[in-house]
Length: 69
Image: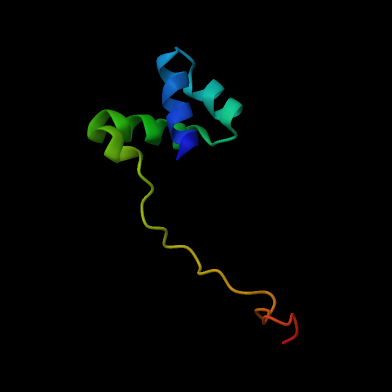
């Protein structure tokens, strides 16, 4: 979320989307989307939406209090 605010700050400081993307380590289209969402929806437009990606999986079994499973 902080990165989205940083994108907006840099946008209003006059940086181009391409330069902002390079500074923040983002794709240019992501920078444009953050700015567009903010202009159309305000701060609500910066909130992260529900991710439809793959669920995280455990790589190791959870530890017990004794540290042995």
